[in-house]
Length: 135
Image (tube, rainbow, N blue to C red; front, side, top):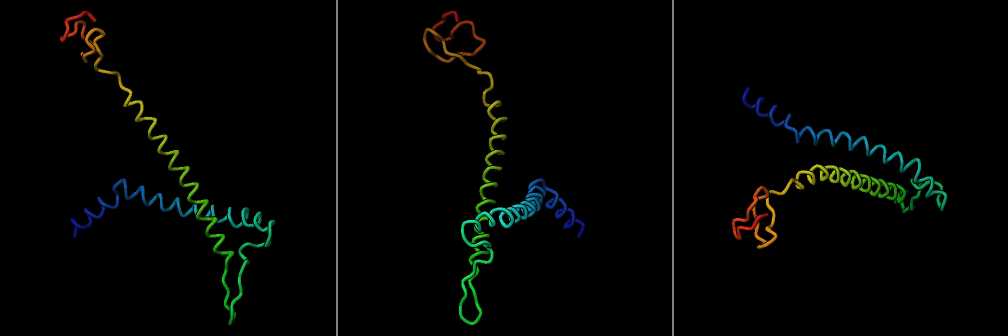
């Protein structure tokens, strides 16, 4: 049983699992922000065009049933806003991650070309090993 608990502890405390858990919590909180933005800002703006309350936009059916198109519109707006913001955040993170990689890739060259025979030689060489020219 102790071995099982140790393995579970190692799994649960790995960086990827903790990062994922934090991401889910932040994503849920961010989802609430997007929902509030949609319901309190965007829906009233849409309401200025036509129906004053988007969430109240329903199509009545028989026997008291109704199709709530307002809720569907709100959910679509929430999804589009969330996807747009996540796209921008991930794009910014990728750009930030690539900045450090470019510096590593642009390391000092270790070879140069001989001006006479155009062969690759060591950067510290003073004579070309192929044509014996002074470089």
